Image 1 (spheres, rainbow, N blue to C red):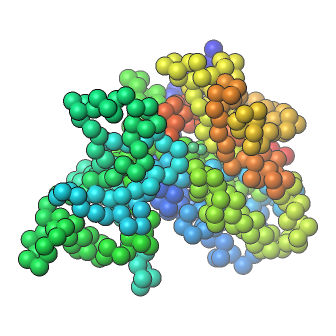
Image 2: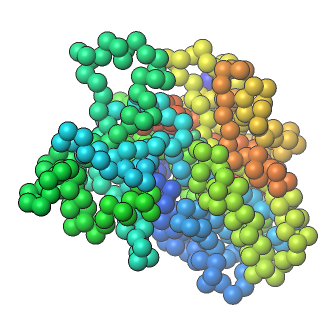
Image 3: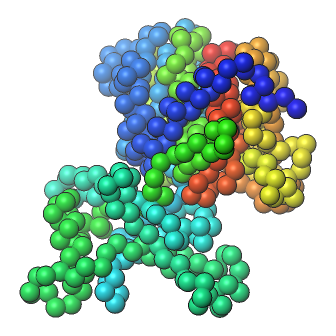
Length: 454
Ligand code: MN
Ligand code: MN
């Protein structure tokens, strides 16, 4: 059973690439932070905003952002855009817990934030663990306040309580789905009463609001126009005595986002225009103006074509129809603790490289993009020619469950698409795990795709 580890004499490149990745994960805990970090990296690598170009020519490096939650990058190729692009697409939102619009309340001397979880989580994983608060507060005067509390060693953290085992007889007899209920995911944030003489009621809440006023210049009403996300506090770590894996929050799908981003940052001038799009809202269905279903992507391509002097409605259709894409999203890695959910021949394993999923979906491939075999054959050749290790898998045994990605959305625009990502253990938990070998090989695979797919 050959693995990526056996392929390389030295692990130096694998390890140093993963150091860059861990750094990205730590800086990009929300979709907005991912876009900011991607922008910084793009600028460092010579990319300029689309607005700063009058016209576009071969070799130009362009980025465009959308509402601070999407970024789209291009390296203009030698061939006309009507010949199609090679596209990498990944999502930068991850399951988490969001604050409600009226979040703050006091209960018996404790102040809590009420929340509504985002995406598919096992709620019981989010209690009795350090959490951080990230996001933005948009004020009536048009200004936006950025918040990040809980990441620096000197920062406080917040957290959700769990019932002590001594009194948990009733709780322990509930099913895992009910043991912690969504409405009970209330985040503890304070317990010191205000010394303000005029405040008689909710003195602890008053004290917390005063702190927020002092530090961020925000009022209670400003929560109405805020987007504040509760995520696991702390940084990504090496896992394993041999440091072969990374444990961290948000591998789904920032592991594919980072490797795709790095691939487009590092490529030479390609024949076909290279594109990388990082989108929001995948975990809740990809809708909305920052999700993959947003017209943003088509609009950007139209603008790119216009600046390359190639735009017409038919040319845009040709560009999409001739484009090829890897929908870069994570796969479920085989877990020796839970072998029964997989069918071993068609399962992703740690260390076996980039993972292609012909289809995802559930109950008889429902809702999936089923990639065309002609396209898969082409990818096999490019991966083999570039000495990239890859594997193929399904998301679990037939009728065990399932899931979806952004693949079908681009396929609906007549783009040729297949899911290709990195295998993850503990998916959607606070601390997901990936193999460093797969992260590195994924990056190499994405680069090969941008460079060589015709
Ligand atoms: Mn995903
Ligand atoms: Mn997911």
